[in-house]
Length: 95
Image 1: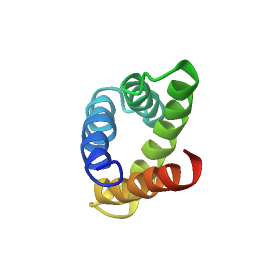
Image 2: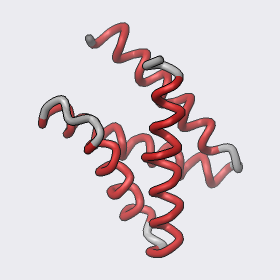
Image 3: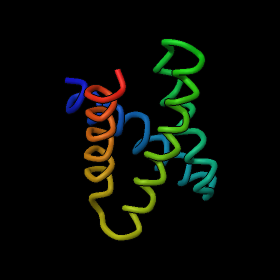
């Protein structure tokens, strides 16, 4: 679940939707990334240090989404894949 289901839900709810909505109104990619990463870190409240790490991960995931969006229309799938690989790496090598 950690490698597949969580990245699908989290990417849609905490990257795709916040980035699309905030960019529609503010037209600032950096602001959309910060808002998205903030939401992403808020749901990972295991500790302050973990929230900081997930904020950075949220910035990285938003950059993956925004850069993928420049080249194709399936950016959310690339972001889900990247998120899944990131989670698998953490599961197998970090924890």
